[in-house]
Amino acid sequence: MNVLPYLERPAEWPFSTDPDVDDSCTVDDSPGIAKAIECAASLSTLRRTVYFPAGRYVVRTPIRPHYDDLTLTGPELSADAVSGDPDTATLVAVPCNPEQFPGVIQVDTALRADDAIPAVINEVWIRNFQVALTDGPRSRANSGIQVNRCSNCLVENVIMRYEPLVEELPSCKPSNLDGITFALGSGGAIRNVIVDGVPKGGIYLASNPAVDGTPSIEVENCELKNINGPVGATALKIIAANATVRNCEIHHNQLHPTDGTIGANGGHGIQIFTQAPLNAPVSVPEDIRIENTYFHHNAGSGVALGSATPGYVPTGIRFYRVKSAYNHYYGVNIQAGTDVEMKDVWAWGNGSYGMYLTARSNLPASTFRIGDVLLEDPLVFNNNLKFGSGPNSVGIKIQASDVTVLGGEVAVCNKENEVLGKSVQQMCWRTGPGDSTLFYPVGNVVSGVIATTTSEPEIADCPYD
Image 1 (cartoon, rainbow, N blue to C red):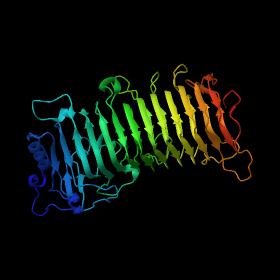
Image 2 (image 1 turned 60 degrees about the vertical axis):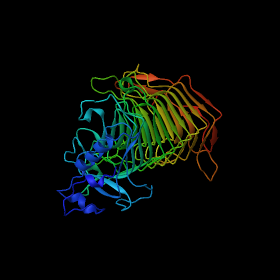
Image 3 (image 1 turned 120 degrees about the horizontal axis):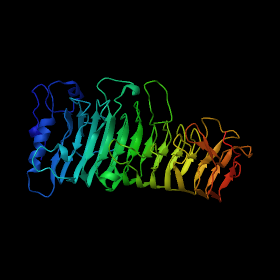
Image 4 (image 1 turned 90 degrees about the vertical axis):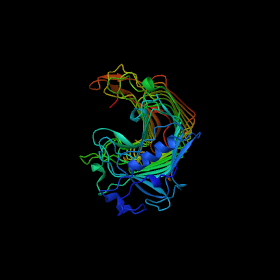
């Protein structure tokens, strides 16, 4: 089904690749695209396809492909395609109401207009599009591509950029606009996707396992970069379960708060965290696997695991062959997690510690934070660059219990071949309101670590300073 015959363009704006159409007041391709989808859905074929020829489509209300076995696709798209490439199909979101409908595609059974609303939609495939987001919500969160209640759905070969009609500073971007979100029990895959410049989050896996179940989600061969708005600004956010991320590159993401400060509470490469929604059970990420992925030049940490909810921590988290480099704060920062394995994880050139495991928080002292963490064959070198790599710099710092470090190497490049910095350091920590309770590291094992121009692993003196 070719979408062009269904478009209702005014004579002064024939269909083309002209970017000036973004500023038009009379062009809206949304109704025509909706008609093409309805027509395709009426066909009896096993899979219905709506084809978007190369050109520029103005989407003022999101496209809603709410039918099973439906594909929306443009011409084959190369990852090297530049913005506005005339050989690609570009969906330009110029929303009528940025607070509610800022994006180009929303999949959700609740938005069906007929009387036969299914519990889920199956196998909606979105492929081969460039997406230009021009505006978004500042109060009610939404996404450029929002996938709700969708089983075995696919977003593939998509390049999404934030391209406002009027240039704006990162701190002035819409605070609640994510790139691609899978939520409310959606499962499937996000493959060969580039998200560039979106304000809040590049990809957000947002299903609550306690409410929505644990459908599998794969994120593969994606690049998430320049996520740089005033809130969060984290490239990959996961509160869901049963997710795998592999062969991705995540870089140059930075939080730009409205007060002009740059803090450590955003701008991460990946953040796996619990969330306590209103009137619903806490969403706890579990069974998450990250493989062969590179996090670099992020203004927060490359990898962050956390929880602000007492008694709930990410669990069953696996990192294999992951690299985290040149991030402003930590290469790896675990503030909360249990049953965590990190094997062959590299951390180098980060501003603070290469790896930092800390159970320290302002939550009640009895609150469980970190346990059963394995770091196997880590390679940690030349970190703490933000604070200088002097004798007090630390490669792996542990303020937690039940942590095992097996093998690996912690190194500092030093031409004089003298000890400079510390390899693995365990420290006591205070926690609870007002840092009232002192804890000592117990049950930790550090074995077989090669310390190259760093000190041998040590337990620092207590109390914590």
